[in-house]
Length: 90
Image (cartoon, rainbow, N blue to C red; front, side, top):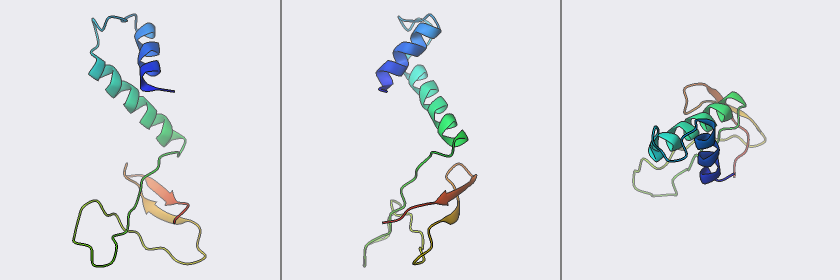
């Protein structure tokens, strides 16, 4: 479902199709917060961990994690501060 469709549905539910009470930014933030809450509740959040290539300069975009051959799941402290798990690595 597109964000515009979520926005239209929320505007209908709160009787505010003209953004008189809630700005577009407020609605977008509320929708994204609700989607994140649902994903966390059902353990469906994903985070990308990127290992730096050899001799790469230091950068904050890399979030390396060590993997062990033939081990399928790794416990991990998730980005929300709750326990998570890595269940696939390439």
